[in-house]
Image (cartoon, rainbow, N blue to C red; front, side, top):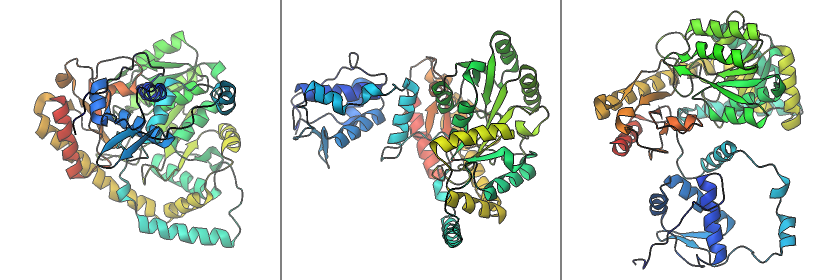
Length: 485
């Protein structure tokens, strides 16, 4: 049945910092005011997204949230409607204050709010951006299941499932020490290692241990925004340093050091996030010399060290001369899947002790079972074997994605084939030609605008091939072609 009129919406005067919150507040207000009556059919997510010039995913997320709250209902093969029975609205103002805790909480930053909405909605049916995540379909499920069962039985029989060391089990810390020593040339003791849930927790703990009164945090001008949010939430001013075709611009860093007091710099030297560039040795050494001279910490996020395809990777900053101020943060999640939350921090023992003190306050300790499982798999050589196996598959996917981009786009795009990692940094400036694109419809790409707070015209996209099979890579690139051309 045709609708007599299309319902129009206007978000400019709606309260909220993000498009998600503006649309959520607007629909809720229209329902409360009676403009959207009970039983009224709402526009489809695609139609409303086109009307408001927002991403369809934003509309879907808002619809899902309002359905959970009881404002909307979805009828299969029919559409989305205003609920016939609305949530209670008859509370007095004094009673509303009793049940509303908003006035007692700190407001999140706009960046934190956006990251949270993405995290919440990524767990539902709506596809989220893949900018270089691993393929969970490659996990050795049977091996993991057998090891988990054996570890659970052994720990239970020996009454070892109680409270433990907040720095992590001694077994896993020793296994990580051996890996770092043999594979990454790092000379450290178990007292210098702390197990965390993942690199993001390591970044947050580092921002808790460091003192904002000692100076600002330097980040690359295209960067990992969850790290920026962590630093800002703990009171740090963030200063951005320029990037060029070789990564962090050391000359610009020297200029920053001449004008500002710096507590730390956060870098992703193995594969710069998001541009995938590997920081060359001369710049690594220069960065460490500056760290020693100016006494600032270097937070090295080594999030995907295992995935290098052409030659042996350059050793981490933490293994090089003058690395006394380096805090090395790593993760095992890329080896298996993000759902297996295990990472580590390596630093001097005093820094590790402070990090463990923070863990006691928020988490007490990690997951003993998972830590022992990973330790056993590392000691038996199964982790190393799994890495060798999936590295070949990810390299094949990288090469196939590069081949498909050239086939479908020709010379209209350009890129440098990354030496490792799970994403390609694609120059799309010829196709965009100054157009303002907030986000492409393809779920497997993320625009350069999403790695900076500056309002810039998109010039690049980060295409994640890791979680995609060949047919999925082709389909995604074809969708990008339609959107860009």
